[in-house]
Length: 323
Image (cartoon, rainbow, N blue to C red; front, side, top):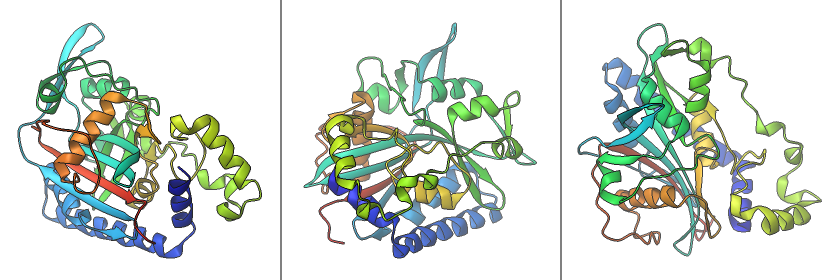
């Protein structure tokens, strides 16, 4: 844990890492601008982002991405008093850190992408929102879940950031909002840009811990001792830190890339030898295997079948790399 924390604290204070984040953001903007110019649909837009990010790297950090072609994956669950079958999401964003090829930290976010209808409005399917907001126990009806889970799937969603929406905005923007916030702000079955702008976003950079360089803080050793002793099993995502935190909204691509590379997006599946969500950890590792990362991390997954039409984005922090 100390190695991960120190690496992210180091990156947080470096101008060259911020420049890397800015370059990646600018390239995603360019990609979305071309997609809007070509009148691409949501699937094409996400696929283009996937191609733009794949292979980008900065020292210990590397992006992997893959568009999986196949049939859509559906799950069955109860929405109040009625049975419903819906697609879970069309994109999964993963942040994973490894040491000696062992996963020491992993976070996952499901994202359903939407292109605006008109006047910066997005129509929300209420059954899918119910799923991404509440994560009731569900069974796989078709695709990855019925191929890999014999029983009902249970995701904890303790962070309330496992389910999200990605809102594409002309002429080339992406806004990420967690499902609970969408539920609270929607008007009828629509949410608008003006609704989203009402969100009070907590800015962790106001935390007094970061008014001085973190690693030089006089209470660093004492703080770190208590984190390791009492809170390591929780992944410390409840703390108001600029990394390893819990970001529920990113208002543009710059915010998305920065929070993703600081491990602020999604639900913690496992942390420092503790599995926080067994089903989510299994699902995440199936996706990591499908992306082709078995050569850089021990996934402990054998014989799992993958059937889905899905985009997977992975930020992998290899703590063994120099830099």
